[in-house]
Image (cartoon, rainbow, N blue to C red; front, side):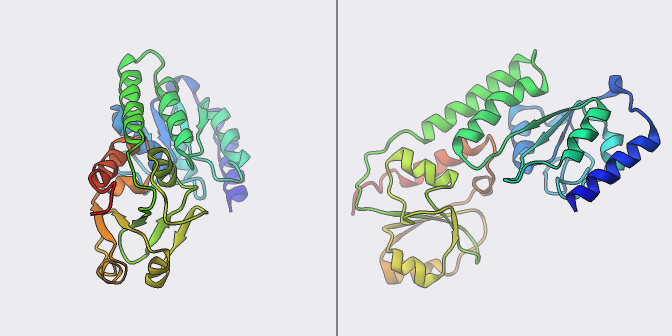
Length: 266
């Protein structure tokens, strides 16, 4: 599908002729995480195109899988911001950007290091001369550093972090939340891997001392887990923890605050 979309984009541009490179404005964000970071930086008003899942008022231009060529050309962004998948970005997008005169900036966001890189580089990609964006980026990075500072933690107390709701998607050591736990010196109840769906019996077998539920959805299964394992159930009602954006530092500080006081067994 992506190759076909890229071909359609190029055909449309060829039919319309060269786009005026001098009339560009703002950014098209093809990633909800990058969009959330732009808003946190104070650059939300500079978004001229977005995915259907981005929480801003800009026109929808689609995503990497279903770009709307007409909408993207109409938006005429100066920059296109992308969170590439593991297989990379289809060449059609880069060809389209070249015809528009737009720069493409890509940041994979699987790790905290990659999130930090995106936050650090995004101000220059948007407006190199805007000192306000750089200052705000420094503040977001400082929040990540504070969140990831080591805790005085009892290593016998394992923590399982699970997305709230019925899906029970747990954060393994290879996820950004897993990296956060490791930086804090907190053992992850999941021994390896990235995101894993866990049933109640899986959680009981993992035998965590603490289960942290992140997000706003109700988790009725947590009562059974608490009863059968004796685990402390902690809820961090913050859906931003589910998106690897520049707001992660602030969100992870909330997780850290929930863990403080639970460092040792009662």
